[in-house]
Structures are given as structure tokens and as C-alpha cells.
Image (cartoon, rainbow over all chains, first blue to last red; front, side):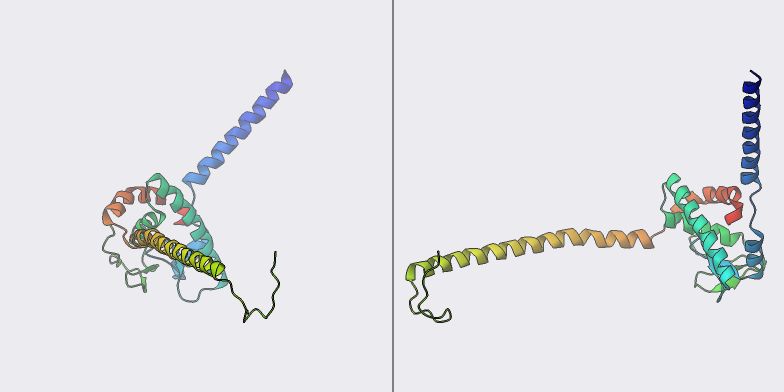
Length: 131
Length: 86
């Protein structure tokens, strides 16, 4: 009987722990410090297609960050697009519109002519279809 | 069963008339068959290839504004929910 109670307690504790870490995972997920630094320094920029790009000839570390983020983004877009009955390209392009609009001063983004631009306090140059 | 050949293959001394006629008739039939098969194959190719090309081009180029506006709200939610990758 005592053994059964202990089992129950352990189970309840582990369930509670899982719930807490799960909450922390969703509510407090922030950018990795290396990724945040790469954004701030302009080593990476937001592209029109919804993916991250390396600005100029980036270091191996920068390229690794971009590759990692883009793999995660692609998986996210595929899942979201299918739940919205849209294609991956449509969803990713829309995401690109919003992400470029949300860049902060000093960060890089891709203008409709394909060039890298540095975000100022003024509105960014975006595709005419962007909301 | 093989007949006995008196001369070389390139220049037979005797060539019987009846088998020759039958053979040429057979060849004509064969030629007609090949021609029909070729034309039917050709027709099949055109039917299969024509519709595939325009569909692929439209999918890649035309991202319509109305679709982008419809998705915008979900995209904003997505950024809040997955702040670490955006």
C-alpha cells in the first residue's frame, strides 16, 4: 500500500515537472544569444521568401546559425501552411512580409529588388502584395 | 529445316517466286503496323505533355494578395508562439 502511494507521488511529481517545463518551453522561448547577436550586427538578414539569409560572405558560425534557423522555419511553415490550406511558398512569403515589417533599426532585410538594406526608423521597402 | 545452299547468301542462284511474294506482303503489313504504332505513340505524348507545363508555372509565380491577407493573422500568431526562430 505504501509502495503504491509512493509510486503515485512520483508519477504526480514527474507530471508536474513536465507541465512546468512545457509551459516554460512555449511561453518563454526567446532567440538564442548567438542568433540575436548576428541579427543586431547585420551579419544575417530577413529575406522576402520568409527565410533568413547570410549578408555578404558570412563566417562558418554565421552560416551554421542561418542553416539551423531555416530548417526549423521550413518545418514550422509546412505545418502551419497545411493547417491553413495554403502552400508552403504562400505561407513563407507572408511570413517574410511580416518579419521584414518587424525588423528593428540596424537589422538587415531584403528589398524587393533583391538588395540588402539596413532597417532605419522609416518603414522598410516591401513587396506591393504585403499586408 | 534449312535448305541446302548452292551459292553464297549475297547472290542466290535460285530464288523461288512464291515465298518472295509472301515475304513482301508480310513486310508491307509490318510497315503499316509500325507506322500506326508510331502515330498513336506520338498522339499520346502530346496529350500527356501539354497540360503539365502551365500548372507548374502558375504554382510558383502567382502568390495572390488575397491569400497573403488571409494568412497574415496566423503568421502574427506564429511569431508570438515561436519567438525563438523568428
